[in-house]
Image (tube, rainbow, N blue to C red):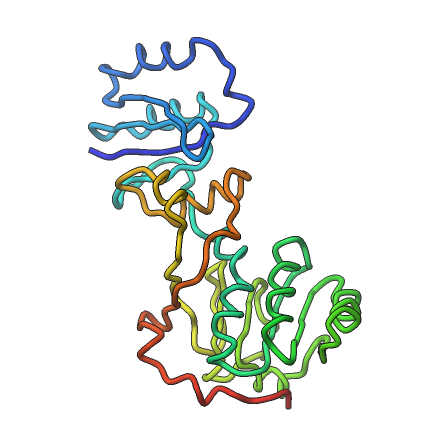
Length: 266
């Protein structure tokens, strides 16, 4: 028995009679039961699957306007799963700020472009690090000028390999260029789960979720994907979620001595 949760898209909210028809069609014949309730103030579809019936499950979800789901337990479903990537990307600057006192003075950022999430991360990092190394595929020069003007920070656009080797923290939202290898002491965070040459990867976040948000997460579901999807859809304010601790290479942060990670731009 598994439960599948999916948020209903806005354009499907006002389709009278659809839920009743779905219950009549799928309740007994196809091994799935359908119900609906509010999660974070938005209609959410819950489907209980009693046996393997992937095609019918997919049909039910598509008809009701669900394109991404969370699943109780480790089960395969024929619909794209929610994941934590949006939330982790939103909190990327908070992660850097959290490790700044432990890791040193220099942060390196690898972006494709600078949108809202990247801008938020940069502002957080600018408050916490003395030097920023910025590698942006498009629009990097304007971003560097703005950071220098507003924060008076030494910002290096398109840093050299030697400078990158001196980074204490790296936020990787775009693959590193060929030949770029970070220092093994550099704490790296890649919310999109990409491989980062060198560095000491931050592999997990321990989040401090306000009780009002935690209470909304349905029992049996991992919180991060549901919170991430709700944040992406504008249902919650992710800035209320804080960083309690991070894990490095699957080992709790407290197992590492990061006091020797203090280097400058070289």
